[in-house]
Amino acid sequence: MDTMAVIAEAAIADMPPAGRFTSADAELIRSRRAELLSLGDRLVASFYDTVFAHPPTAGVFRDGERAAREGTLAQWWQRTVTGPLDQDYFAWMALVGLVHVVRRVSNPMMLAMADFTVTFVAEHAGAAGIDAATVDSLVHAFRRLAATVGAIIVGASEHAVSSALYEVVGMPEALLERLRDAEVNEALDAARVETGHR
Image (cartoon, rainbow, N blue to C red; front, side, top):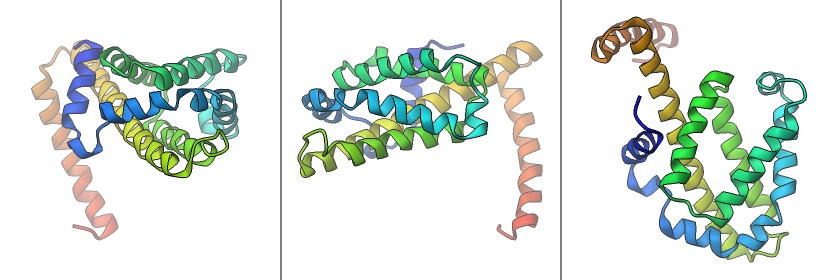
């Protein structure tokens, strides 16, 4: 399997540049770090209240694990707001993709909670003392961050599953991809009939 940094770089490279997180986004977030850090405790509590209120997402966690996971999210928020948002940060996000595979965190769960974080910033940054124009810019920066982190996590989880299958089956990845594509094409034909969409 590739390194986490390589996986992260590949995911970012696949994204159209207009949707990627930028150094200007990072600088904007860092410039408002005091106000954003003040939101940390509420963000963490609200995030996990939301996760634990939904049985499928709550089912990802072991009994008594919430405090540890809250600590991890608090670390992520601290690093996200204070930086640096560099290769090491994005490699960490690729590692999260591997964690999601073994913990059975689905991509829909992850993407919904990434959006939750952006929405939280949109709804609470003003109350933290950030002016409306800057809130709007911050929301756009966090959207690009969520898209980039989401792409990395999805890319890492796909890469991990593909690499694991290759190792378990002992079959070249190209052959596995051809077999996968043949199966998916059959499912696609059936789905087109089912939905009436070609």
